[in-house]
Length: 314
Image (cartoon, rainbow, N blue to C red):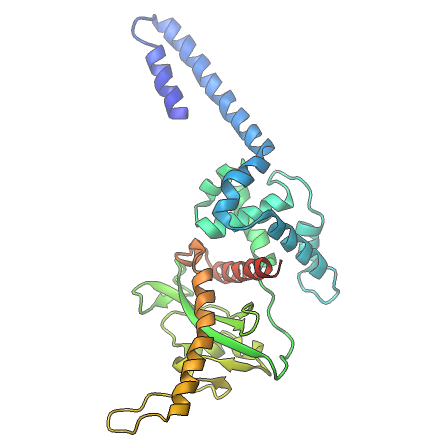
């Protein structure tokens, strides 16, 4: 729009006019552009609801009830005395009021849109009528608060969990390493419940060149799976508490008996659930090329998993 107006101004201030007229009229056009930009920012802030319904919500894949559920969930968990994030949650979520960065619903939606589209903060800020710095501050403040809380209690013996790892490309060379996908990535360990298919735990990022067997212990996922039966693929050898399929015999050895083959078939069908979960998580574009530094990829993965759990249960 600005480019069209500038081109129109240039054609309007043609050579047929005097120099004084061209200067005066171009000044009016520049003043009109400034007023247009200010009015655009004001209208964008006042019509954020319609923008959410038409553009932002389809891009973020998060519905308004899900956003309200996130806020209610965090408010409820922030009331506990033993909750480590209660002061920050009280400050940013419980006392949510309209600020220069919008209401709390707009701020949660901003984080969801950023995770879903992986646009730059300058691009995301245009949707909400705020500055790039304000959008960056909203993400820095809300990303740790919207993340999935770690498991602190021991699971019951009847609980069945499934674990698997996925590589997330990231720009932070201090946390990543060159992996089999020929990119600098981190290994994210994801644990889901075999019955509900909800994400239970997300391990801390480990370098992408580490195998799943070591990443399972280094990420702290093993401590969050205490007391439960854990199903995994053959890459988790060395962890006796993990249930893995029977290995295929080498050449010259007798084949597996039929009952072992049947168990491997059942094991494969159950383990496919975590593969579907990883595919759903990786549909959020930030997990395809994360530009956040330090714990940004960890907060993003846990936040996406938390929103997925709430979307499945509401």
